[in-house]
Length: 325
Ligand code: COA
Ligand code: ZN
Image (cartoon, rainbow, N blue to C red; front, side, top):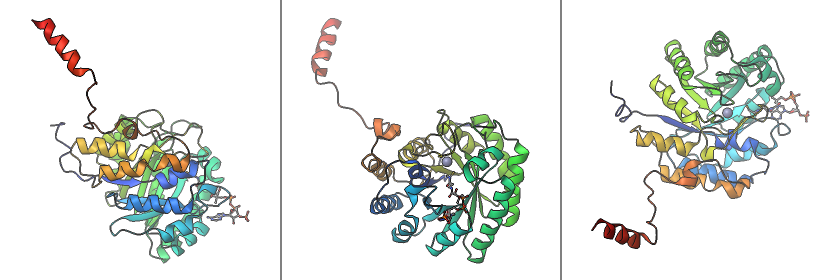
């Protein structure tokens, strides 16, 4: 088995979540027109999907209280799927009304995290989301379900695999198009990711499967590579490495879009993304959010962004060569 060239040409879909998972956490409100301009820039980078916003209660997530305007006023680029997070029927109606391409529903596989995040038991969430799925189906809008804490819950610890697969199966039975397995607080590790990804691929070959990692403990890229080896080809990532969950203790950023694209391109995968444009978009963030972003690519540049030689280089070389004779 050759590891060196295994990336050659394989298509990996990159789904941007920074404008939702990222901006929902930011203390500084990003003006609506700046959000629209950022998403419009992202639309021209080659991303497969953009999670534009969330149609949640404006009291719960004030940073995204302008969801309707943003979703309506972005310039849609054909081929890009514009999705949004929806917590309930009210959110689904708002999202459908705003011509969202896909509804992304969330619930946690951990009872504690679900209660903390959504103030409902998992059973109550599932019942409420069943109604959301029916609403979407009536409007012929595809549904993706993001399951939180699949790789561990910050309050409960490991979540049993039969819980994860049991909740996922219930949504598959409802007829949803996609499932996202979320590592909400960066607890996933590569061998665990490989096992769960492989099992999900085998169990639901017809479902669009996404992996969603946070880089909380520095395992993000390793987890992406493990998931790819196990058959995954879709990842949620965020520009600048923004992100987190307001109700998950210790949560930090998603895996960073430009870091993942940079690494995958070097390895020969086809992400379809124009890295220069993506980095350019990431560099727009600091003035909008009022702080630097975690992105190592924004800080250090690409692997072959070469640096000028030191100004005294010629003198140093002369001296070194003189010592040779
Ligand atoms: N859009 C707009 N407003 C909404 C709404 C939606 N989707 N859902 C609820 N509301 C409003 C209600 O109208 C009500 O407003 P009022 O106080 O002016 O009457 C208020 O929010 C509370 O509604 P209620 O039905 O009691 O819901 P809740 O307070 O239990 O909140 C959620 C439930 C899930 C809607 C809310 O907690 C939420 O949006 N959380 C965000 C979760 C999230 O996105 N987390 C990060 C992702 S991991
Ligand atoms: Zn997340």
